[in-house]
Image 1 (cartoon, rainbow, N blue to C red):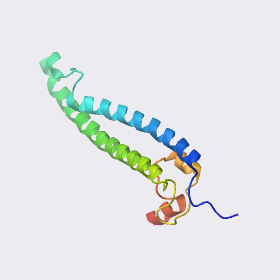
Image 2 (image 1 turned 45 degrees about the horizontal axis):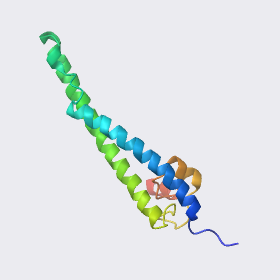
Image 3 (image 1 turned 120 degrees about the horizontal axis):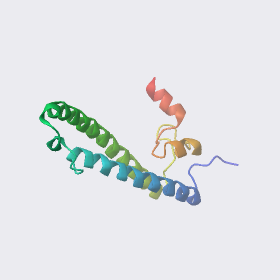
Image 4 (image 1 turned 90 degrees about the vertical axis):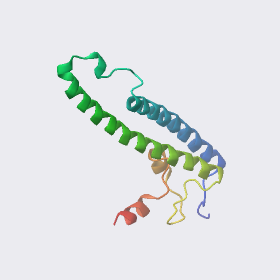
Length: 126
């Protein structure tokens, strides 16, 4: 029996469902972070006494910077998930871009946007 060169359509559909769930969650998380950055909740230093205002403004700035970094990471994650959906449509999903072999299902379930097998990833790090 020859080695599989791609996942079956049924397997790809299973991965599509997993990715769509993760994508929905990622977009929801991004919107929460975006709300933190734009201060859509309305909780800012305007409703506090002046003595704490300076401290709160500093903390708010730091919090917004952190939320900005997290939002950037979330956008990148969303883009990777969307690229994985394109690979599913092209029927190239789950194929290691270095070795050309199938990435194990366990890895794809843990990291659904993976494009490298563990071995290729470890080689890349070295």
